[in-house]
Image (cartoon, rainbow, N blue to C red; front, side):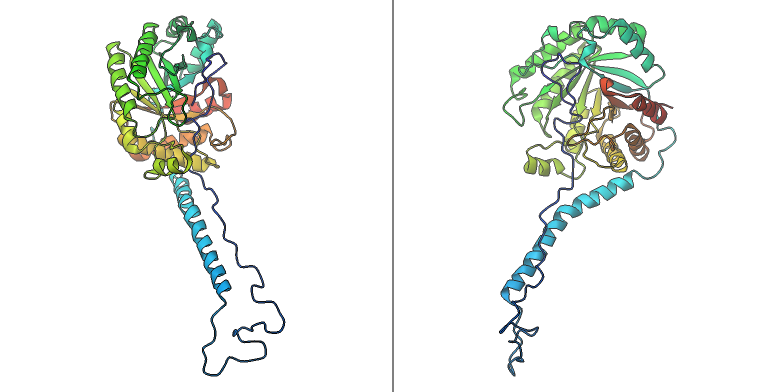
Amino acid sequence: MRTERNGTGDEPGVTGGAEEPAPPESDAGPRGDAAPDGDAAPDGDGAPDRDGAPEGEGAPEGDATPGPPRRSRWRRRRTWVAVGLVLLLFLPPAVAEAALRVAYAGDPAPGTRTRHRDALWLGHAWVDGRKTDADVTALAHRLKDTGIRDLYVHAGPLEHDGTLPPSDYPRARRLISALHRAAPGIRVQAWLGDKLATESPDGLRLERAATRAAVLASTRQILAAGFDGTHFDLEPLHSGDRDYLVLLDDLRALVHAHHAVLSVAAHQIDPLPAFHSFWGTTTGHPKWWSQSYFGQVARRVDQIAVMSYDTMQPLQSLYGGYVAQQTSLALEVTPATTDLLMGLPFYHENRFGHWAHAETVPAAVRGVRLGLSRTDADRSRFGVALYVDFAATEADWRAYRDGWVK
């Protein structure tokens, strides 16, 4: 998901998972043209018959029958090359999609339900004064008897230099106190993020030590305002970014010194080996992380929430299979001491990367349960994260409760 820079709208801008995610898709490659009908020479005098001899004459005695004309051979060769290219483009995605459909089959294991470590992303209106005490009461009632423990409240975005104006979250302290009273046990984390200058010249630059120092100072501000932790969403963050790991090491030390929680939103994991490299080369936007890099990030934080939406999958079964795959991949490399949360799409846009009829809460919940069942059914530090409060419908909440909580 991406946060808008003005911080004055009703909510942070929604782009779903990564900045402008472009999951695997089946782009149609060039289609070879079959040789047109009637490639043979025009009818008339001198037109060759099937043996290649002039009409009315047999092949010269003792001579081999001439081969097909060069032009026809070239057309056939071109056709086979085109067919090969089409297969090269279509076959791997087709196999991958079939595997996702298989991943969606079967029944989740008994007990693969909430561990009461779920989370909910909340928009900026909660800290700028637009939400009232009545809204807090209604939210507390909504959270009752769910598995939600953490609220990621949008308090940014960070400036491109890493600073955070206090004017961006003027009512934060009052909100935190009200939530703690209305919903005891709920942790309120500050959701901070910014666009990174990884794919354009404009944005936050993690390679600058001064910028990272400013992010640490902004975190101190947030913790001083009373937040129970910080939740970072920096995009687009490329797989293997060492500066991000350095920042996380520093943030972890700072946040733990304040007895708070460090949480991050994470990109999806390569659905095929090294797919981020291929996609980055062809589109300029790698989108995914390698499984190894995901593990490196997960080991440095208390919580990691996978943005498992905006997948370009056209069917619920394929999307659910994709979520099941992502859940398994993440479980394999997330240490037992870190909370792993899988994102649920509580929004209904139709745009590039996201089809609302396919990316549904029921499909995501089923995918999460299947991935958990097959990989680590008894894992305790696991949950789902609901994105986002201002776009959610009653049907979304009902699907979460019926599919995951009950």
